[in-house]
Image (cartoon, rainbow, N blue to C red):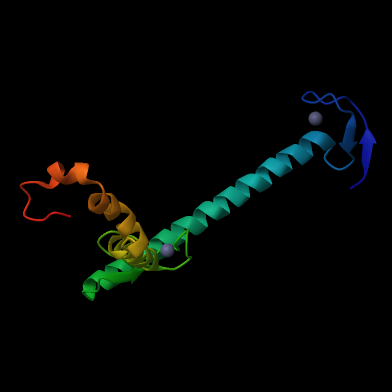
Length: 138
Ligand SMILES: [Zn+2]
Ligand SMILES: [Zn+2]
């Protein structure tokens, strides 16, 4: 677009203007940028709304089908779409976390660690009082 230098702009004081429309170049660019970013925001919001709509539709269908799982919003951790109807939690991630907690529960101390704890009870006679009256002595 061809520009010329005319009256300084009221808003920015810059003199460069477009021949066509006589608008300030700087302000025009700024408003265009703002309009563009607003459009992007609107597009993103519309996308989210659409996704939510699809997810809630899927959920309703799954509820009608008496399922426990539906295809909802993408998980931020694993990008999976399968979610539980009750909790809305990602299926893969909840399985992972329950798997982990299950493992944490059954992970036992190594024989060396157990022995390190028990050793003083075998060797230190002073601790005998501590175990008196118990049905077991370790
Ligand atoms: Zn301006
Ligand atoms: Zn996940």
